[in-house]
Amino acid sequence: MKNNGHILSASQFDRPFLDKMYRLTNKIRRFDKSKEGLLYLQSLLPHKRAILYFTQPSTRTFLSFQSACHILGMKNSEIRDATTSSERKGESVEDSLRTFSSYVDLIVMRSPVRGLCDRMAAILDSSDRPVPIINAGSGPDEHPTQALLDIYTLQRSFKELGGIEGKTICMVGDLKRGRTVRSLSKLLTLYPGAKIIFASPDAFKIEDDLRTILKDGKVEFLETSDFRDAITNSDAVYMTRIQDEYDDHAGASAKVDTSAFCLRAEHLKIMKKTSVIMHPLPRRTELDPAIDSDPRAKYWRQERNGMWTRVALITMLLGVDQQILLPEL
Ligand code: NCD
Figure 1 (cartoon, rainbow, N blue to C red):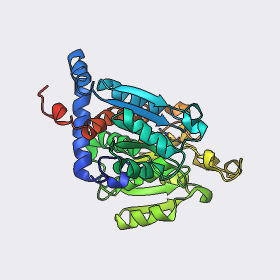
Figure 2 (cartoon, rainbow, N blue to C red):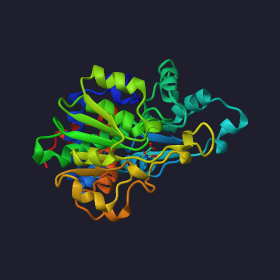
Figure 3 (tube, protein in one colour):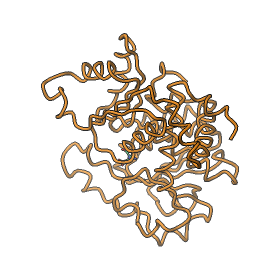
Figure 4 (cartoon, helix red, strand yellow):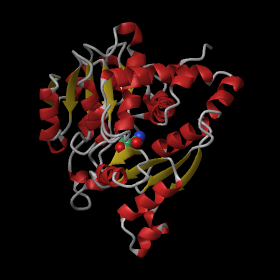
């Protein structure tokens, strides 16, 4: 793994890192089954502090990181609105980040600005408090820890079916601005034989840079507007919301007809019996709640997997992973 201990992009991971992280995640879930196990996890990092700096809305990512810190006994502080911090008085984000690094051992940040995490990581690296930064969503660009939990969910779903290798993952919705789609696609380059079908209206197709990454990573992919055909031929269907917060002018996305890219109960019968349905959430109308009770729906499990994979990631970043891998249970 590159990047000086920061988690900035899905491109920085390799298979040994992921495989180790998922072994850790499985072990952590076993610790969760008993009070003794949970108290042991809490004893690992009570001397460490984290700040959650989220200047873009979040429910799951925020709460799962906060819960992950609690599971490890860490203390949290948070800023969820820059208008309540000294940024309101004109302080730069750079100075804010340096200030956080004076008080904590880990910074988890979400921002609407593409590339901001990378810039902040570089600034901290040249300071005397180079604390790690985890990118919890950087504008329409990347969401690497979501990709980690998505791959974990896929891997568990395909455990008895030969793994992710050789499977077809269909991603649907706003593929242009969906950062979860971008990060997950990058991670799929690490699973030989995985194929991707991108199903979207023309206005929301993937960007050229992702096409290049997939070609370089030798991932077979297809772009289509035929939603029914795409979901029929896939082993996993990954639904996403239209990211209208990035519209150039208000209401631009609403002019695009996305009605043919919504998963409804009637589609369940044309999908494979073993397929899985995923969504990073939050959902709108693209994913019918009537599907929630179908055994193929994995999005609630994804939420919980997000917490466990983030526990695993933090133990690796702060150097207590061996204390989880070594003890016999
Ligand atoms: C996603 C995000 O923030 O990119 N949500 C999440 O973190 N689970 C997806 C979205 O907002 O549509």
